[in-house]
Image (tube, rainbow, N blue to C red):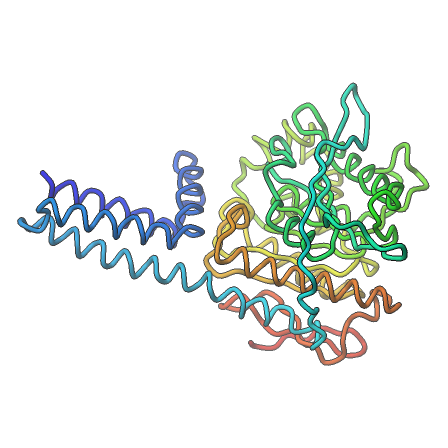
Length: 431
């Protein structure tokens, strides 16, 4: 039986790898299992190679190669390792993709800086609403700031389809990375559906922005510079937060508060609640958004769904954006990220950068993987350069460098060069 067991194990491993290249996108039964399997295989590709190598050694010692199924299993494993090698290679290529995506930042790369020990303060209340106290965690350098030092701050928004998720689970690699380099990160919870109805989620986060600015002195942060990031639903909320500064509809109780955002980094966000391009399964709206999040019908109130879509909130005064998405994302289709990046790049007076990650699934940054480490360095570069230009008094509309190359979507390789001239016209060119 050993050769046959070896064949079954090797075949299952090959199926996981094949699924990583072509995950199920529409089938209702296999959609979620396929996502989880591909997610784990892609971001832990080298782990799969290691455990399969250990398995091969064990099976060979048990006599698996004494019969033909064992040799077939060995061949299947070899082919599988080629696939896993391609997956790992794509992860390692992230550094070059990021360099291309951020070419428009110019040559002023930030210095590595001093790596601080970090301190995390948990469960700091920032709002009381509906009988609940909503809290955030703070990540900051353990060493207090100097007398005249003001540190840059970033608000992290967790994902979870607006119905689940918690500040304890997401954004931790980025917050720790930035805090070790002098930033102060705020990881905020917010009310979740179905108990919450849109735009309760966004309103809570507006209060978080106002709270951070009110308590800037307590954490030694610059109240005039606040970045925002988040993944999935958190990416949607980060984009909405950045695009709706000062909108009174979302600022009940803090009407006069400054809720502006100076830089936005949405990860694998959802940018369209109307599904106008049919990139999402129809059930996304009818089974989920309508009854769970919006509590209304798209056919009856299309304007409400449009107002909740970052695609419909793009305007010239948007802050600098760095949009990050995987081309293998089955939960938040990459086509919507491409459309959002293209539109933002054409309309916004501030720079827009788009990084499309080859072979990456949704939620890739949950793991401290090869890809994640490279993306963190790219995000740090973007945020630090934008912050340095802010400190130098450069307004967002002038942060577009003349004759700069900015990554944008649209080609077969998913990274085109976009050239921005002094009049901020966008001209497409093949990469």
